[in-house]
Length: 225
Image (cartoon, rainbow, N blue to C red; front, side):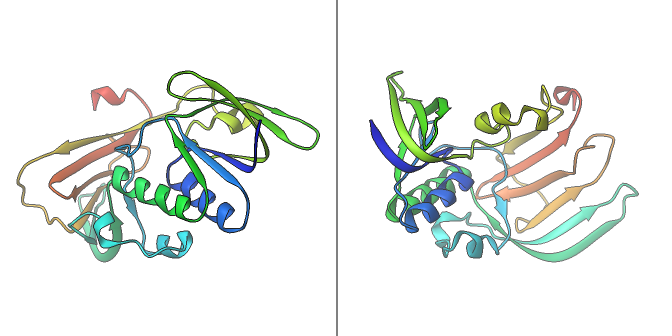
């Protein structure tokens, strides 16, 4: 049975950064991602410049979108518009997450994609973790620490602290990507605050490379929006 100090479920931004700092600190670290990487995700892809300080890395320009986001327009429910300079990091999750995976690997972490956390058992001095590869082969490893970085439906945390989570999703967000021309500024994030069709936060329009992203969030039947 292989032994690691740290096992991290999830190869997204949180999992990769946790793996980087754990390995850099001298801990034998394994982090896994259930999907094949690089993996495209429609979610997020916008962060603030302080992310570089948080992750302790200067982000190479080629890992960001060609069009920078430097301004924001907020359309309020009464129709009034507020505009302001607002610098953001604009990226696609396949390129950016893969780069963070490689950063963690360079700092000494071991990474496996198409690898899924199946179960875990807490012992007196360690944790026995069972994982599965893409061919459904099971492997048990012994770890000291288990970190859950699996996103909005966190496998470990939902089981250990079920009282902190709803029984089912209370809402959703949806993104559409359009290839076309428009009158909007490519370096501006447009936010639309209107409770009639996005009562969870705001609707948004912005550009990633050659595609316009249009999305919103809602807590009811989002398919009717």
